[in-house]
Structures are given as C-alpha cells and as structure tokens.
Image (tube, rainbow, N blue to C red; front, side):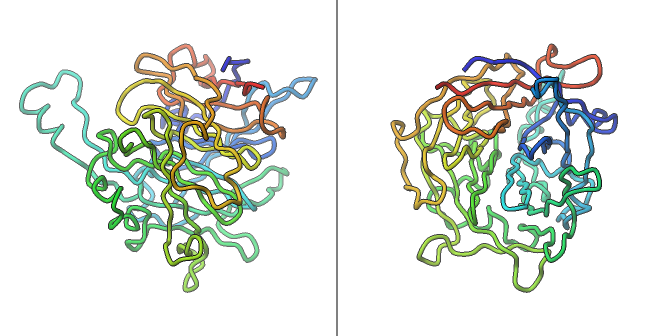
Length: 359
C-alpha cells in the first residue's frame, strides 16, 4: 500500500509531556473527530479534523483528554497506566481495552552483569491493564462527540474488577492458558486490537501466535444486572460458553489492531516479539453478523498490502477508516508507536499516514 499523504495530529502540552503522542496505540474515527489512546497512560484523547476548501482533512487539533478513572473504577487507581491497546465504537458506545499482559523489565542502557540479569528476571503485573471499559458517547455543547460517565439511562461500565477479566476467563482454555504467566514480548498474552459489531466484540491478540496461527477472541459483554457500572459476559452462540476463539493464518504474524470496514474486518498484523516488521493489512470478509469460522486459512484472509516500518521505530499500532466508503479504495489512517524523528513536528505534533486500500 502506498502512503497517499501525511496528516498532523496536534496534542496539548500535558499529553505531550506524558509522551502520549509518541506512544499511540489505538485510533477510531467518530465523524469529524478521532478517538486515540496511548499505551503509557490511563487516558483517552479526542482530536478534531481541520479541513481545506475542498473538504479534505489536513490535520487534527482541538485536543481534549479524559482520564479513564473519571469514568470507571480502575483496580489500581487513577495513577497507574492502563496500557490501552484498542478502541472500538458502536451503537453509541466507545470501548477501550487494556493489553491484559504481563511485562518483563528492560535492561537499562549501560547495565551489565548481575543488574541486567536481575531486571530480565523481573516480571511485573499492572492491574489496570486488565480492564475492558464501555463508555457512553454523547454530543457536547460544541456539537462534537464526548465520552461521559452517564447519559440518560446509560452508564460507563468496566469488566475486570473482580477476577472477571478476559484473562481470568481464559484460565482453563486449552490453547491460551499456558501463556497467561508469560510476558507479552515473550509470546505471552497480549491484547492489541478490538472491534465492535452489534452485540459482539472481536479482540485481537498480538500474542501468543501458535505454530504460526494468530488468535482472535469473540465475546458478548453487557451491563451487569446487579451494578450498572460493571459489565458481565453473556454466552456466545447457542451454548453456555462465554467466549469463542478463532485461529487465523496470518503468515506467522500477530494481530496489532482490528478495524471494521462495513461487514468486513481489517486486520493490522505484525511480529509478536520485539521486532520491527513485517507489517501488513489483511481483510476478513463478511465476519460481522455471521457465525464466523473458528479456523480461518490464509486464502480466506486476502492480503491488502504492506505498511512501512522503521529500524527500532515507526511501529504501526492503529487503523481507522477515514471515509464512508467500504471495500476497495477505502482510505485508512495509520498511527505509529515510537515514531521516527521525521514524524515529529516543530509544533509538538506527530504525523500519521493516510493510505488507500487497493481496488
């Protein structure tokens, strides 16, 4: 895929100080606005498009931020990062999901010997990573969408406070349970994408990849009957199972983001380990509203093209459909974690790519 142009995303001072603009991990369009999130905070950001005389998007500014802890309860409180890795929008709700991953400490620059070995042996769990939040979308006084704690009878709600997280759900899973104690960058559990359609959420895993097969988890979250501020999972399909797993042949790559395109699902793929590339986009046709197969072969997931990546930087982490068209010719906005220096602008912004899907 060829990059058609680049657009600048301009963030406020507080978010730039938190380096949100250099740690973007999720993006979703909402009319003229973008919802974005970084993986080093517990906040959600909104940006508004600027248009030229022909109605073409030239950039995004007017940044506002909202703390997730102002909307829902977080298990570790407001100050610990939530590692938000996916955003989805459907039926008046914005969904935000944490990575649900453990992390192994990095060796610091200059460290050697015993100190380096000690850091590599240290595995950390941060409880805010293990949440799924559903947030009401409302129209603000400025006519733009905003996320709120309550809107009429709708209330912001969360899954993952009482040993009911997605990883708790997988404790007895024959494929995924062995990976729950493994850090994300070691091919452990690592959620990095979510898409919503009707009453379903499709959750993409960067890891594990099982003998070359990537994993997608399907769930049906709903309001908990005892507490409108909590979510519960309803059975998926005709049985009592609260989730379904789907195995996708993506050429040995994991899922880095998911994005609906009509009734199709666009899949951003990349390495599960700490590698730069390759980075590709596939299409899963007609998944929405169907009883999707549990094993999906490569010929059922057409490759749409490759995206650029850097050497230690420019890691594509989020996809958003930019216009109302679907299928061939759709324009996508791609945001990057660890952007290359040339993506950073003098005004403290960061450049995202606009690409057009092949016809």
